[in-house]
Length: 57
Image (cartoon, rainbow, N blue to C red; front, top):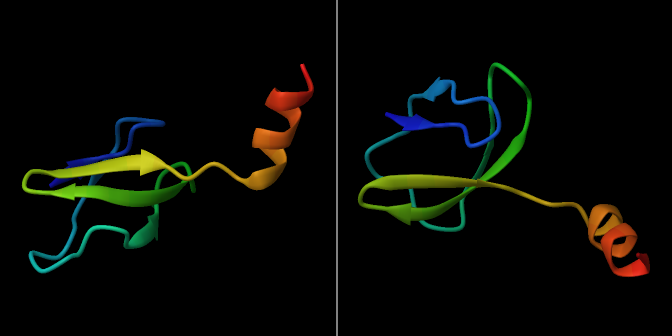
């Protein structure tokens, strides 16, 4: 079981999931990307709009 980095909810993932796969947190709806498979680690996927806003500051 992995945990959402946004809300810490437990997320069941398939045993054969691959790095780079994306999924949504069932609790908070955050878009997540698999960054490691052993152990499974997830990161919130940032949208291009957020990155542009950060660069503008």
